[in-house]
Image 1 (cartoon, rainbow, N blue to C red):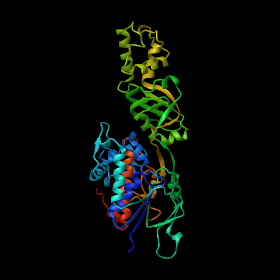
Image 2 (cartoon, one colour; image 1 turned 45 degrees about the horizontal axis):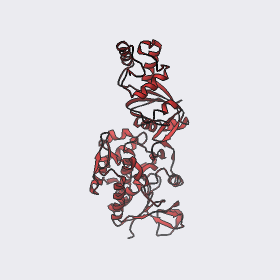
Image 3 (cartoon, rainbow, N blue to C red; image 1 turned 30 degrees about the vertical axis):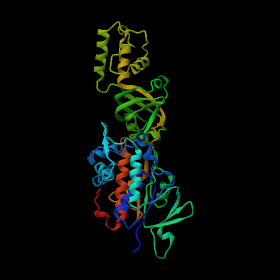
Image 4 (cartoon, rainbow, N blue to C red; image 1 turned 120 degrees about the vertical axis):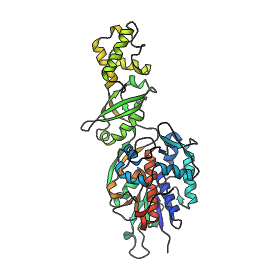
Amino acid sequence: MEPLRVVVIGGGAAGFFGAIAAAKSNPRARVILLEASNQPLAKVRISGGGRCNVTHACFDPKVLIQNYPRGGKALLGAFTRFQPQDTVAWFANHDVQLKTEADGRMFPITDTSETIVNCLMNAAKAAKVELRTGTVVVAVRRGGEISPTPPLSNFEVILKSGEKLLCDRLLLATGSNPLGYKIAQQLGHTIEKPVPSLFTFNIRDEKLRELAGVSVNYAKLRLIVPEHSPLEQTGPLLITHWGLSGPAVLKLSAWGARALHSSNYQATLLINWLPQLQQEQVRQQLLAVKNDSPKRLIVSHRGVDLPHRLWQYIISRVGIITENRWAELSNKNLNQLVQELSQGKYLISGKGVFKEEFVTCGGINLKQVNFKTMESKLVPGLYFAGEILDIDGITGGFNFQSAWTTAYLAGLAMAHPESTKSLKADS
């Protein structure tokens, strides 16, 4: 009997993990991993500032899925089969220990992504995965289109070199590369339009941009996009030389990805710089400073707990000049200052890029995929894993986790297609 032939297109995190799972699960299978560039795992290398945010220390699938603006519902069952705990165990079994940081993000204890890259490369080699770099795929044809006579193959993968690879199982793990969408579409799949997710906000305010580097640990943001419901997020906020960044902004960009795209990234952002205080509490705090220190300059004697330069910027927004003393603060200025601190209005005029990491929302319509096996419901033998699916998470290791999970399930199912329904993940 001929060995099962598996081809994986895409040498990123999902492609490697799927290929390794398939090869380890069925050592007799021939597993070929195709990567167009000469350097596989490029995104793994740069992720987490070069440290690789492997996953997140969230071990309850019901809580975990709340970090996915798109795809959470579909992932619930998948996470009961392979979740962050399984990821940690998998890497531990391959001599890579992970550590958990205060915010839940998990990194290799070496603090370098090369540890993860080397681990995946070595695991693929040990499992006898045939890695072919610099190999560009141009098209895929289904078996019935290839030859009506035996031996039949499910797919023919056509390479730029002219070579044709026949295979029984095909995994598309091409990330946000248009090629993957094109192949899936040609094979009958619907593509939800890919648009950027996880990005920063451009704010055309030179005085704000002069504060680049200033941050607050906790702010509340409310995003207002025309013809869409408002969205809110809380968390750290960072001022940059182009506008605003930080976890609160990145989370908002993910949840508001489609709405912002439809508005050409023109929107209104309301910032509550002091979300731990009610508006009336802010007012009373400012009045107390006015009564206690009437002769002090407003610009140098802060009434609230904010970075000094940010305080100076905020009071300038309401027309308070550097010579004004607390005793001179009018009721009008007081009201404006309370409003500015608790609901400052900023106009978003575009998006920036979050480091070198690029995440898209959009991809394969999830209703066309069996999430027990990651097999297409339309094309037997075709599987999907990673970012090619219409799944995206917020920042913090969640996108990698959906890649590990979907790839692992796909790998197991491809290796033993006749028994996929009874499969359980094991590390």
